[in-house]
Figure: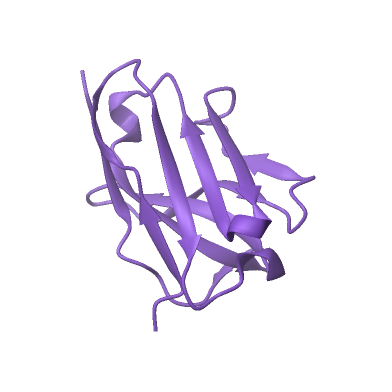
Length: 118
């Protein structure tokens, strides 16, 4: 069953911006800490950013710190990732998922492709 749906990816030039959305579908996102993950070709999926249930606590991977901002709107059952200063190294499929005890929890969606050209 689908639990969350990612959208907002696309093709952008280096230095550009994108805003990703993660909408709950069959899952109430406010019940969970949530995270954005990404997987580049030939690489393992990695955690990019996470946010606590109430949004007060956030975490960023060093590679995106200062450029990406994670946020959530619990009444809308949606989470966001604002990505500024995009770099070709950010090219990947981006996924969202719940986080439980530091690990992704539940099924994965289709993800949204982000491609950054140099």
